[in-house]
Length: 406
Ligand SMILES: Cc1cc2nc3c(=O)[nH]c(=O)nc-3n(C[C@H](O)[C@H](O)[C@H](O)COP(=O)(O)O)c2cc1C
Image (cartoon, rainbow, N blue to C red; front, side, top):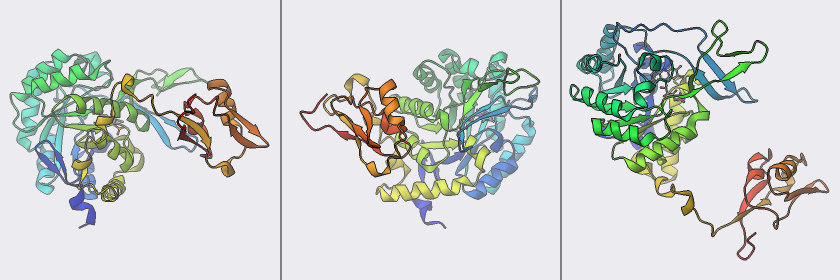
């Protein structure tokens, strides 16, 4: 047994997880076989691809993905216009029963969606519970096509509808009930509160952010182009992490239910940030599509190492540690002021990037003198732009000495 096993035990409401990492719904959980493979690699749980009644037609288009990559070809953001599970209810009840028999210690969540009629949701939730699912997750957050059918994000953007649907399903399930929220709202709290009022035990956030990935400038077709046309899709991957963190922290600050953090998690550090922002556990989709389910091994090992180094007894001890430090802008300190300094001048290549940026987007405080970066403290306003864009890490922000305020 790896040393970190006991260190990673995580509490999610009334449930104890082997570690905080769950494989989330999307292509990585489209079949029982993929979930089985993931469990063998060490994922503590999984959420099935959203299961729909057999009467609900699901026909995917091709292609259905688009990717935004950095200069090194690493993934920055990912768009999908994929629909829900194409497998039957019978397939899923069989797989859920088989997975629970083989992996009784893993947390298996059945994600469901049906027509706007709550009775269909109740029936589907009951079938998944009877098959042995440990929890039911309501997908009221898919941003594409489903809203055209009056479900998905079309439900999840209206607190009243979320409350009603959650209450209806709560009436028929005994296992924990999870509501997965859409970030495509102006304020997450009314919807999150409505889910809790309706009886949700756990919240999950975020589903994908509605987007238009780009336009092919040769053909002028939007991306992903499906025979020349496209639609608004769901954005995921590293670029959405700041949105997920904001939403998870807002829920954790205001509501008394556990929240699972989702969105842009690809390294253990991302997971640790979500937990510090209040998440009880995390879910991962795009990173698994890009790099495979085996990433859980590094995530588990990395998080365990971090917890040990910080003398934290487990993920529960890290949970919410950053929350007391998040507040109103007006409450931020004006007492301590920082200014830029060339901390590692030997690393400077005289590229001049900081000079131009500070001149045109800052305070005209930086110049190059004999190929060395020189910062005029009396002009520096402490905005920090130069420290972010210097490719060599030459510039750091230091506390301005007292009496030296600009
Ligand atoms: C290709 C793809 C398919 C997805 N399918 C579903 C789905 O069926 N139901 C659902 O609730 N979320 C679905 N999602 C959303 C993910 O579960 C997750 O909320 C989102 O991608 C953000 O996490 P990530 O950045 O780790 O991918 C899908 C995401 C992707 C990329």
